[in-house]
Image 1 (cartoon, rainbow, N blue to C red):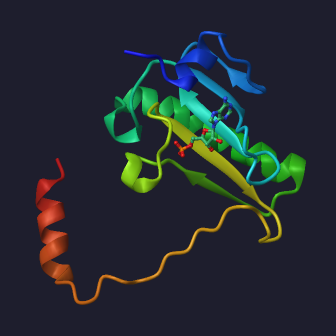
Image 2: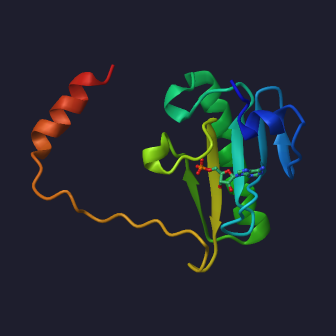
Length: 137
Ligand code: AMP
């Protein structure tokens, strides 16, 4: 199977603007920079996405994402940060290697808009909540 682009970055076959590295985690600037400091935090071991990543690895990635967000507020003067991870193409995932976006927010004119609007019509929320609850281990 062909290596994904993030595995190539981990293996040094493709360069990146590195922010952080340890044995398990790598963080670098996203090539697209939807806002100044837009970072990606990835697991060095290959997992397809957040949902398929073992808890321990996932926690290590989230820990670094939190630290980068904290630094970007302090250092870059961001007024907020979106911590975002897409799972599967239906959510917008384009690179099938677990990664977390850290997107600093400044004045609302970033190249990133997150809008949540209710568009599902009538739902039976008690039944839905019960079904999900009953399937959580
Ligand atoms: P997603 O759509 O959540 O899968 O995000 C993938 C991200 O990877 C996009 O924001 C791309 O801009 C970013 N990306 C793709 N190739 C590279 C690269 N070589 N270096 C840095 N970021 C990259």
